[in-house]
Image 1 (cartoon, rainbow, N blue to C red):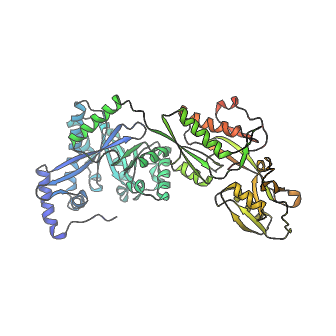
Image 2: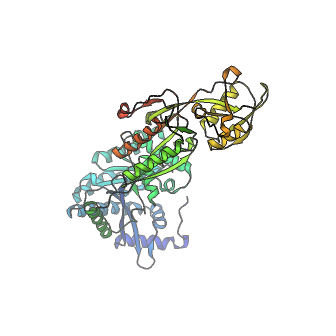
Image 3: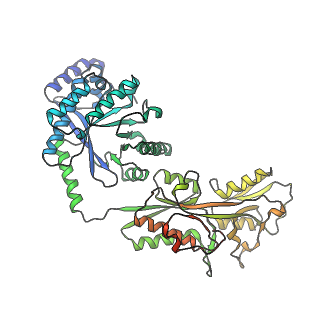
Length: 515
């Protein structure tokens, strides 16, 4: 986005005023807290430049920073920013404030000054500030010039001991091929991605977080304006947040008070942390039953079990989202959900807490008369269902034509449509084991391979959680859901990572009926 430029007629006046501002101490720094998304404690701050003009009032950095860069005033201004940030950090240190790093932005012009490293070294020595208390933030534009020289400068800064962050990642020149070579400590995700409501942008955030974690980098997300932003970022594995949800940039005095209030809240608050476990359940399910009991809805059993868990642990909120398996998987990867039950997804195998196998079968009404060369009328689940995918793949493998006659996400409606003669459907094997003696579903019959129908095989479903070592309460919720499924008729656990699984063995060799 193009930054606003001052009116050209006013530029000479503004340039002169900026020189005066530097000399007469009209410039000041404000500090925006950076918050640990896990502990909600301050772990750093970014120093942001402000100009209080005696006549014009507050002048936006978007207006005077480009002017400073064009006139080379950015060099003395940049040096002043580093000196002032270090002086303030030392003052807070002497007052007993928590030892957090203060990050300053270094422009491209300032970064490529031959004496930058020596300047920073001398400032730290003069102020007597430990180098780890200073952070340097650079943007991707520094790599538009000599990248090898840029890496040399970064290495020299690292040797001093300062912290280095790559700011506004994803908006500039960075290439993944050389990102691994950069001696940086943090990656800052541009606020445009965080504020966006587009799912594609959150997919980018997830990819950046995964990349950063694989490189051992801390991730700072800018533009955190809502609790939802913070929760989603934390769910994705982002460690640090910065934005108006926590605080606007503050004067040095206000920032000190903010730190003290955070310490007071941390040490005296008796309010338990608000924790919500976000559970995703599949929208496709069939009626099944616990051995020796009346038929039950699998998804209702899972919801009831989650409700009982919540009543047992009132300090925990449980939110439930019902959706298609593919969308549940995407929501899990984007940090929108903590635990899901869904059809098996490629790439999630290592995150499965338990998996089950579902044997599928073709079913039709007893009176349906279908010629072998006739286009198959299909009663199907919506797009995204593994049942639907498996049915179409099987028919296409035979080269058999088909047409869709009815679609519904509700298994009971599918069964009624099939029994009414609207077409052939695909259901779990256990769906016919219940025997509705008083209902239309009793007219459903299986269609076998011997009769020429292609083999459908099985579909795996599982409980997935991205947290490798979930806390005890989350582990208990996962175990609770597993027991519900284990207790349903025809469940056979394929794989189970929970070491307590041996205490609740499955004694049935058939399969469950849900997706």
